[in-house]
Length: 127
Image (cartoon, rainbow, N blue to C red; front, side, top):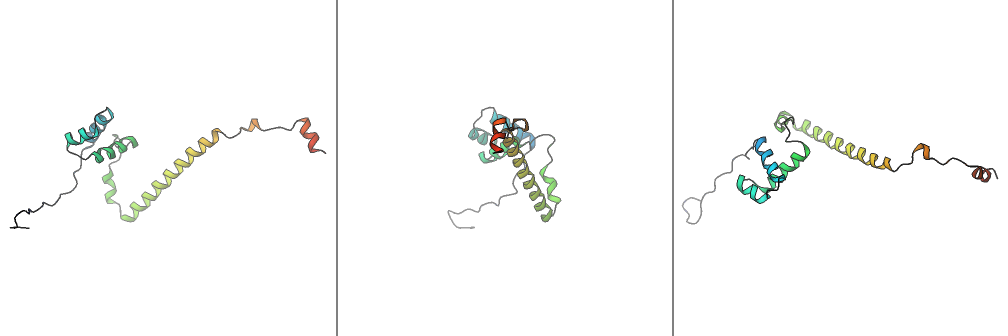
């Protein structure tokens, strides 16, 4: 409000800044080396939550050199983006299912370990 004492006009926020991959990697490496989240956020003038997001992306391999930049998706239509997201969810579910089955397979009886009828069980079955 112009002219009203005690009020000042707030500037409009610009677009969200895009940080370089090198900075993201550097901040994540410093965090993994033991630097505090608060100290890193203050020194680099970024949000602590943003550092957590970068660490999650680092753990998922999204900050690697061979990772595909996310900006490529901007050319996709909304419908295509949704189907891609659905496919990614399906792949994730299948990966979890495979891990579950692998774990379950550890405890499954082996074909060689099946019980074979002995002479006493044959005697019981023939009665």
